[in-house]
Length: 482
Image (cartoon, rainbow, N blue to C red):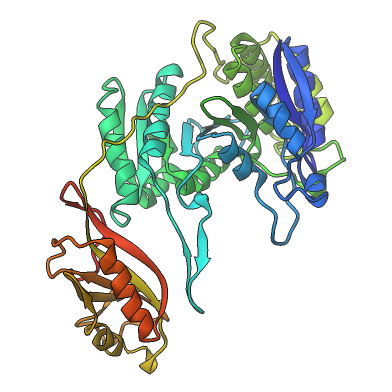
């Protein structure tokens, strides 16, 4: 028996969880269930993360979480339970298989079979945001070498375990050359360790267009967090229904399995909801906990049910479907087909001798020689009709060591020196202090001195960002015109 933690969630959650567990138990899954309560009621009881402290104890015991959708109350102050759980338990890999079931589920892409693997912990989802001026807010995008290396190795190891042939990577490193550039660089380096796979990189905008247009050209795609979140929903929807999407969240010690759709409170309590998304997440769980033959039995019975035209309201089409059923009726239909295999849809097979607990690995970076060669000092400034030449003239008198003001940008566009008068400026200014060629090192005392002198002039400093070279390589973006 394998202990798992189960949460029935909100809205349609209890109905689809009951249906899912009924199918798993009928198929012979060896599960010992520890129920916990999560979601709206827990939020409103004062737990801002949507989960009570005692529920963490169950997760620590079982290390496996089967979770139904939840409702997050409207209004500020409530954290995303999904994000909290992923980060708290180190669930760095999100796995979303997106497969078409033509002709039983209508789609323009009948041969689509793509797995999206999304980094789950960092990127913009670090959630580090600030309001900096009256007009400007900021969100920090964090891409780390360990996080990137883990998710990319995980993607290749998953491809190996599940018989995939090609691994693609989507980034926007033509613009975000350091953050997305690191992700692309690590992908290229790690791909060399897996020569048996075809590998390719796409800029995310054209990659997304190609995925939406010709998804059959992709097999497995690994992406940073934000792109993966958006495009896994897109991919699930173009298979024909986002409601059929199951999701696995995998970490070094813990794992969480769920449907990718929400709690749909308007459908709650009506015995209408399709339990397929949660069931497909549970099938991934069965494989993960080393019950692959039970997973195979359930998955093939589900495919046979779909193939036989037994559909819930969301999939029912008069010219395709044969019987419209509710949540419980669909569960009964799957159970009645346990042991059967689909005839037209491709049957699944899960290798019993394979270790399905795929993991990524990483190595610590070798410390580099780090030289401080300047500082960006960000100001909140509204003076003189926001004329950058006025601000530049003020800052030109301020130096410390090798550092003097060489550049002012506004929203990333160079406005001083030699800016264009047509450029629109907000009240947020990046003021760069370096040596002439950005190559003479200083120290942090220079940064403190510059900051003190700027503050003494009554200018409002928002923050500073050190400009460094690592082993002689520039490790910061250039301003336009530099």
